Length: 109
Image (cartoon, rainbow, N blue to C red; front, side, top):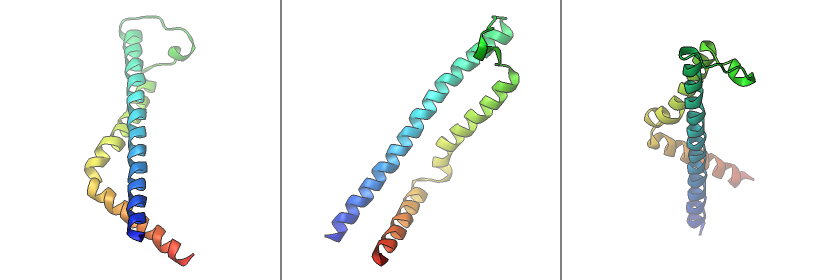
C-alpha cells in the first residue's frame, strides 16, 4: 500500500516539475516575442530615423538594448542549456533526493 502512495507522490511531483518547466517555456516565448518587437523598434528608430517620441519608446537606445539582450540570453541559457549541463539524470537524482529527505522527515513526525 505504501509503495502505491509513493508512486502517486512521485508522479505528482514529476507533474509539478513538468508544469513549472512548461510555465518557464511559455514565459520565455512571450519574452522572445516582446524582445523581437523591441529590436524591430530599435532598428527602425536608429537606422531608419522613424521618430518614436512617445514615452516608453523614446528611451530605447543602444545601452537599453545591450542590457535587454544580455538578460534575454541569460534567460535562454538558463532554460535551454541547463538541460545540457544538468541533464534529465541529474534532475531525477535531485527529485529523488528531495523526496527521500521529505520521507525521512515524515517518519520522525
